[in-house]
Image (cartoon, rainbow, N blue to C red; front, side):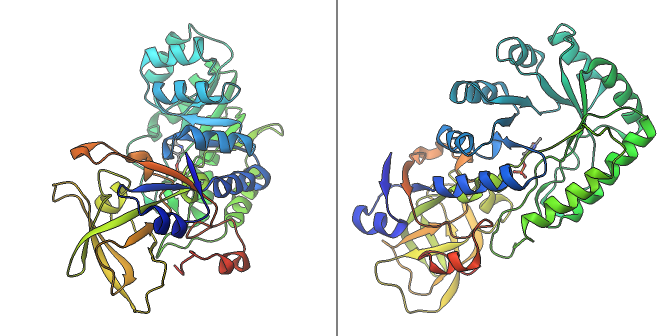
Length: 395
Ligand SMILES: *Cc1c(COP(=O)(O)O)cnc(C)c1O
């Protein structure tokens, strides 16, 4: 992997033909330190947001010791990359073989579930192990989030009391977990969900050892500027302290996006302009899946040695494949004179961006370069620091 001082330095000296993923380890380190120091409990990194081994090592070095994994592939990847990490298998629907390998080969003791069938499966696969942490996932509202996770998983309310009771019998430590949906724009998402946890504890009368508030912590994108993360942590802490649980109960969270969104961006080249549509060399089958399919907006910046004096204008992007779906509507705001041969940095692609790349149509090549300038937006720097950074755009 190469190093460069900045996106601009790379674009002007190398003029890369393929899209380049720009990595900012300092930004991921800063995010991880923030959670490690300020979240009033334990932070598990949700590996699906970005499973790059280089990122996993950055997070580990910054003090993230627990990892939320969801598949056999992620279990193996994290055990190989970080042999001393604690893995938590937090997918509520698992293959029995995956549970057995996780438990017997990789020492995984923490599993989530949302049905009685899954509880029986975990018991069979671990040969009725008595040292399990079992977390029951409850269904909560995704009303405050940009991406819903409210329908696929979560125990049926009718079954919940029975499921908590049965899981209590099987578990060494019993937990309750939920996911408020990704990019939760208000701390109220967590206070509402913790009310559901309270209801569940009261009606089932079980002793709960772990409360896991899941992921959903936001990052900053154009038109989506969330409140400070401290406001989320304060609400969660207050609601947690108020729950009818034992003094020694643990609070966990599973941030994905918030820990890695700032870690990478992509430097692309404009191959053609047709009116306000730019044909660029990365797209829906590369790092821009969410931009194409759910209209997610990312910050963009024209990377030219001499800054354009033109006003910003709205553009849409076409990706490089021959598929019509390879289209990102934006709007992406760029100087009106952007033209073929120009480089554009698309920011905040560290979460659910670079992780989604495919090789479709022969466009999967990805160069990776470490840079030391600031990400285009950050929830972890003061305003003064941001103002001094060359490529920070006003969102
Ligand atoms: C995806 C996922 C996360 C991470 O969600 P973010 O919105 O990226 O923070 C956490 N926990 C579980 C169980 C998930 O599926």
